[in-house]
Amino acid sequence: MYLLSMSSSTISTMSDSLETDKSIMIWRIKNLIKELEAARGNGTSMISLIMPPRDQLSRVTKMLVNECGTASNIKMMDGNGTLFGTLSGNTREILHKFTVDLPNKHGRGGQSALRFARLRTKKCHNYVRKTAELATQFYISSVTSQPNVSGLILAGSADFKTELSQSGMFDPRLQAKVLKVVDVSCGGENGFNQAIKLSSEILSNVKFVQETRLIGKYFQEIEQDTGKYVSGVQDTLKALEIGAVKTLIVWENLDIGRYVLKNSITGETSIHHFCKAEENDQSNFRDLTNNAELKVIDKQSLLEWFATEYKKFGCALEFFTDKSQEGSQF
Image 1 (cartoon, rainbow, N blue to C red):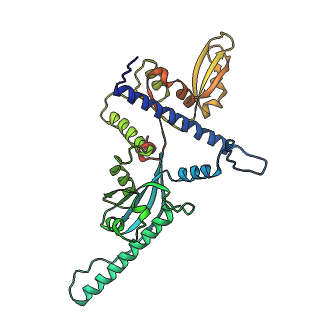
Image 2 (cartoon, helix red, strand yellow):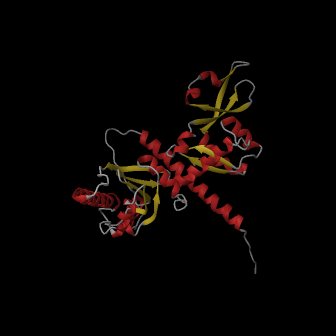
Image 3 (cartoon, rainbow, N blue to C red):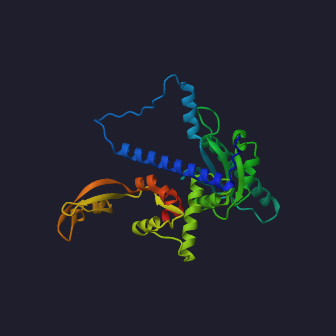
């Protein structure tokens, strides 16, 4: 009999490795989709879903519906309007927003105050009802009559979000999906971003939040001038060679090719990295010392090379997009 023990750090490493492999697989699928989008037919096109033999159509239909429901919804609501959005993977999307003009609370006494109070109460009621109806429209599938989101977060700077969550007008199917109610200091898209940050603990498994934290940590290293960061292709490759990289962060749309070139006279091989403009410059494929032609022995995307070779350098590989504010800034 053998007893096998495994430390928690080992388990964590295995989990991280699986997550990285999953990220690489997703990146490769995205890359394939981009190539397919660029492909053109002879005037006709068709999207086909190929099922394995003896599979059930009902199972595949359910899978497609579930795939549409992997988003977390964040609903911004205050006294000025409501914003409906979703957060799925590393994609943040605004579905709809509308504004509302509610009357201010009347400070004077008498019949006038009562009239204004009744008017405000009625408009507030209509506002909450409209928000509840739109929530059902956006977040309840018309096919399955079930929520198409995995969770709901209600955010706002007034009490309307709480009133909505406790209102009988709010669909019970959506009430069951509410994960958190948060207070934000502003509305609109800025409030949307703030709501995501305030809900980061609940959304920790969402790629968008993970990406924001990762890039934020990188910027923090730069601000503190710790010397624990590099940028650019050449400096990054040098750091990889000496084993100094813990986490390799790459933009998923980085369009740089890795070339292995051979000198036609000396027979020496060398590795070069070219962007699209440099690939079209023929002077990059000649040796300036002896004017020899540099023949292409191998060519591949630098991202593909990273995805294949990163484990040899003992580092983690993280892809990021420009969908988050931090990613766009990077």
